[in-house]
Length: 295
Image 1: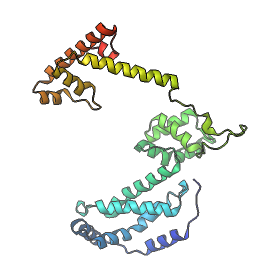
Image 2: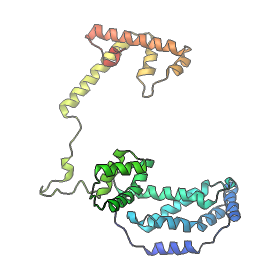
Image 3: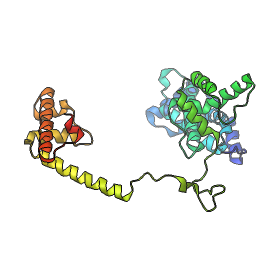
Image 4: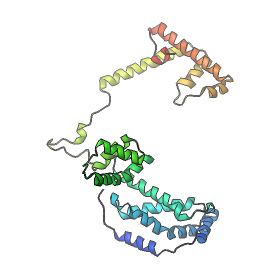
């Protein structure tokens, strides 16, 4: 993203924010209580308007990341409104202190969402890297009198990781993400007339013959297992279905409660059922799936 100049809308919003009233602690708390206790939207509007200057001043700090000031101010306002809706005036904290975190989080999330079509990261360490790595790297370049280019040397990456308390792999990943802009996969390759980059991506899907073989093998395995299940009692079949054939298996404790049995007894019945299935499969087909062979 490329930095953009301040737009007319930005200036109007900034001017309005700078002219807003200054609230003392008592008025601020009274407005917050009016919103919290009575749902007074006028009180909420007055509280948010009074602190819009704080939102604008924080938005300005993120201009270097290339987003338009209109968007940054809008996101700062979203964070400010979230803060106002959640603020508890009885905790003895000024609203400005509380709102700073919400405004910053809203702006940073917006910047990271729009920096790249490929998500840059969302964990706290990745956010810290995104907003602090270039600053630390620039300082190290000055101290060492060097230009690291697109990728810092390994020892510098390790120092950045240590200073920010982030994993080294995250530092290496973020360097690659910040090194250059996204480009379209439909762009043509240099020197490859008529060939787009998307054509170089390997198709990882199965070939037709592999897909057919996999389908046939799956059908055969399901048939074998259905036959092996028929060797079980009704209670054993229930245990196998609940413990092995559900996306979210029942715990031994939950299944024991359903059957009126102890956890240990359910475990014993499960092991017994798996042995029966293994023996049935080996008797009929000479082998059993690995899951049953290990039981």
